[in-house]
Image (cartoon, rainbow, N blue to C red; front, side, top):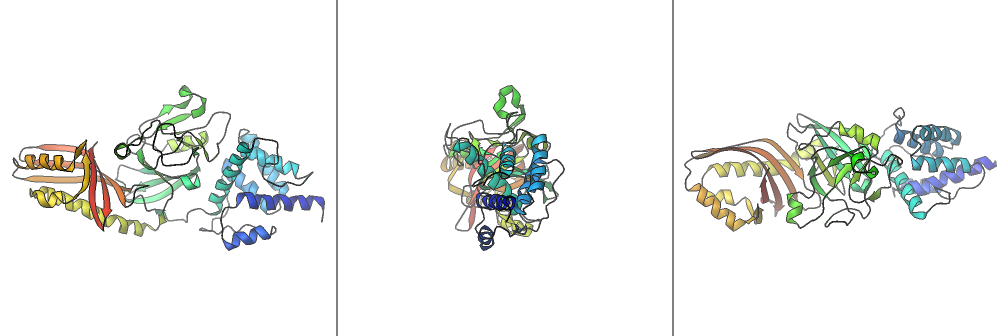
Length: 416
């Protein structure tokens, strides 16, 4: 066997060991048989058709060329990639390995003299990028967490922190379509933010609150900043502290960062953030950050939301009845609103009811999202048109519902 062929197999085996994260029997076989090509089936048989000049697609093309022993093609792809994006450090690392493989054995991804922390970050980035390509969500599946978007929410964002991936969805007449997905960086210490400076990314349902020029705040934030509504009202009730959780870009000298490298923000490449930004609307676009996306068929989402929306309709109907007993049974014992506990709030509602002879309530623009990190909880937003003999009012409300022993009850309510 020629020396070049030996180098190819060494590099191929190295990439398998470093990049593969699945633990299926098929993967174990691949690890043992370096000359068996990757299976591209996984959860979805998606042929590799890289977008022209898209950096992640070009990187995947190079890695797969390595896997098929096409080292010259891999080097050609990588050199084209680094010529377009010279600050793409992972691509530069793979290029260096490909060049070095012509002269000596390569025992690991990144056979260079560099700090272990830097190499570990690049290796982790390679894993999550390639794993996403090899095992993407099947076509047609949607996140169970997106129970229902209101008609004005034409897009929604889901961040799966376990996969370092952000997914963008389009909503048209209640039908969700996955438009794109992007590699992202999260907090250095992972997720579940609880305090200022813990360098963790929060889990929850948030909303884009605006847009700022990232360059005005410093080079770390890239081209743009999209602040998120952390801490939201549920975070505040739980005593979670901190602020300044954003979607933002990367420094001009860095194409992308390691999977866990931010101070808690969700970080995209400037190129990806520019594309994503076209679909973000302040005060409207939800950003759901979770440790796991439950991908399922749309019909299963419909089944999941039916019970919640039925409870909401029952709440509306009972409020119109003027009988406080059936209305108040929709509230949990630990219910709070605007600093009031359940008993104080009940007393206020009973006082208001004394002067009413009729009530009509209409709900519209209803959205419902499962709340990450909380068992059997969902957040519901809606416009409420409230009319009675002594009050006419239109408001936007947010309710947090939790299911206990098979029954949905409201644990928190706020006016927006």
